[in-house]
Image 1: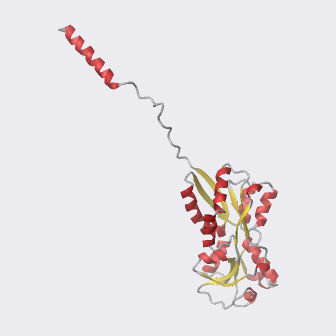
Image 2: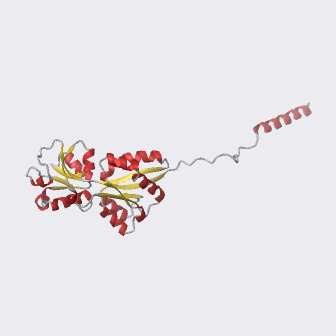
Image 3: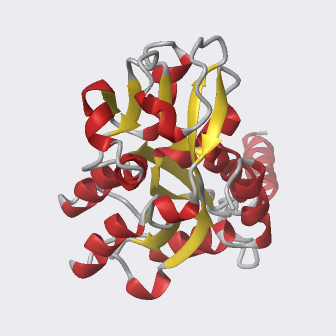
Length: 265
């Protein structure tokens, strides 16, 4: 009886071992797990590009799922200073050639990637509920215009262009005590939209995106230096290939279409 019981136990043990099979091991032909890690690039861009680039981010990331975009918007001059001081950035999109030139001279951008991607115009605006009755830049000397919002000329390209216009028209000294300076062109727009300034000088693209301001006049092209937007990959970028991909998309037909939608030429 004991021999029969031992035989049965031995048989059951062998059966369980056969059913359990070999320990789980990776199959030789099993596919490797797909990496979901994304490359994040920092784009330092002029404040006037905010709306256009926000839309462009959506379409770009949809077509390039491996790359995510983070923006740092501000005045071109301050953004250039940040890059000089070592702030992380992969792409610089400036509202003026001057700020890009400064970085290029210091070899802080990849020169071969630099290209102009947009143009703009300068316009005189007032709030939609404003009471000023002027219709030209020359009439900014009118006593009804007590505050004129402009960008800070040293760091805001729109402010430099505005100063050039006022000096060309020989009214700079006459209105200098009425100037209210913004840290970037969007702050200038806010000053006028909120009624804190009766008039302001911004880009045509900025005036286009606000329902709280109206355009009084456009500056003639020969009153100021050409308003050109250059872009380039930052020399210290840790993601140069992704940065180049973004810049290529910005200058593609789709990128140009989005920029034109928001008032850029």
